[in-house]
Image (cartoon, rainbow, N blue to C red; front, side, top):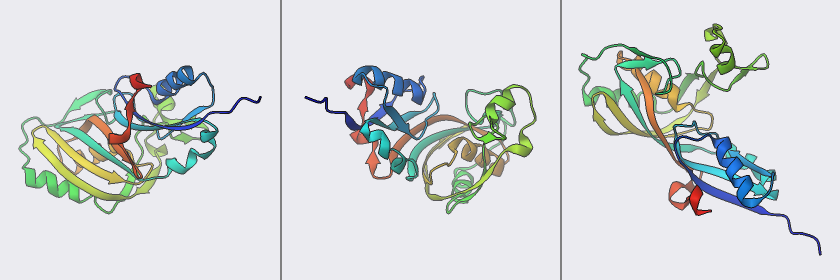
Length: 217
């Protein structure tokens, strides 16, 4: 009797501290198959919804990639990071600056509708066949190579602000860098900013509430 091939789509709540590929490797071990893929990478420090396809379901994984995403993000004002997040080299800009909640809300809302966003220097975008972060880590000047993409910000909402931390919810098009959004927020406020926390809460109609922890598989 022929073996029935697996075909499952998993909603996983990725923990912090591991890569999206680490999640794929764990699922491969659990299901004892190499045919596993994910839709939409999360940085190691980020948590939240990761869609993982197993077996025959990997054929349809591209249909998830282009869906809108929702995130809860926290940016720290007063400094910048070369990676635009907490993993990079920090440069203190202005710890004494006083920025009101209204100023923060106004700056956030200015991104609604979308804007031309430049990819971070430390990103996996390929230029001339090489990943930007590989070139940047070699000390090469990649500023002029960073691609610009028009991204759609359909919703953005201030959730909490206590200097220097700003927490906001954003719904955006696929391919939007929340790290860049945090950096651009700091530029707009004139004080610098970098991303300290990120949680993906939705991909299309798929919600984090329906996801399982890795240990539950």
